[in-house]
Length: 147
Image 1: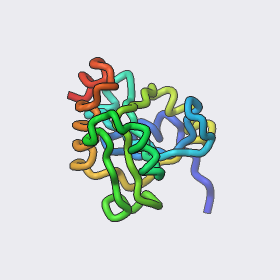
Image 2: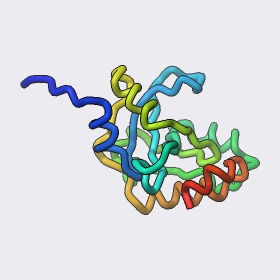
Image 3: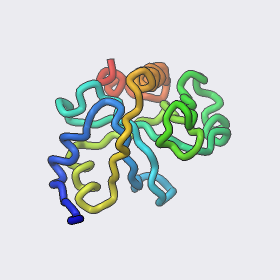
C-alpha cells in the first residue's frame, strides 16, 4: 500500500475543529515527550490563534501544583470517557497554549504532529471551556475567544 502524503495546509484545515486532539511535543515544556492537546476554539478556522489545553497523566501532581486554583479548573478525564487516552488524565485549564495555524502546519510538515482520530465529545469540550473561563490565571483576551 503506498504511503499517501497530505499537504500540511490540507491536513490542518480539514482536521481543525472544536475538540480535535493533536499529539505533539511542545518546545516550551521541560519534557521533550509528546502530549495530547485539545482544540477549544468554537471556530478555529476563522481565528488567528488556536487555543489548546494539554492532557496530563500525573493527576495528583497537577492537583498539588494547582491547589490554590478553583478545583473546577482541573478536569479529569477517564479512559472510559475518552478511550484514545491510554490512562486516566487531567486537563489543567489554568494554562492555555496558543498556536497559529501556521505553527501547527509546520509541526505536521516536520512529522512532529499527529491527529488522534477520535475528537473529544462536545459536552467535554464545553466543560473544558467553562473551566478556562473560571480560571483566574487566564487572560481576558483568551477568555473572550471562548465566550
